[in-house]
Image (cartoon, rainbow, N blue to C red; front, side):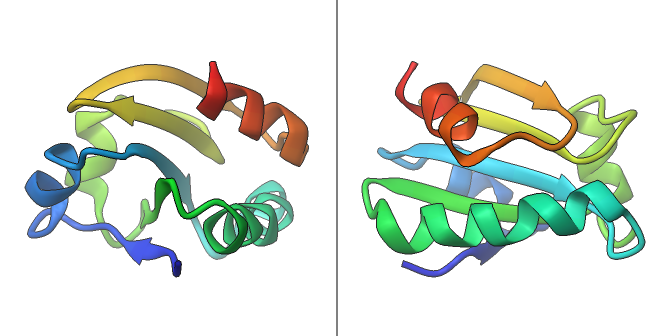
Length: 102
């Protein structure tokens, strides 16, 4: 499954997802974000049971503000429209998967 580019117009559909959702808040200029991005892409390809989305904070400032993003990369796990886990900073794949499974 591919990564969904999340924005204000498709956010409601993501909130209603039956799957757990992993959201990666990032910016193109952010070094740690560029380290996390391929890991998030791998998770999207390997784990079809999750919906994986990315939010470019420079393009979607309102959505980033809604989630209280103050540092990036920020990873958020949602289930049934509610945030169940989140972390700030680069994380290895194992930690990201543990957030999703937790």
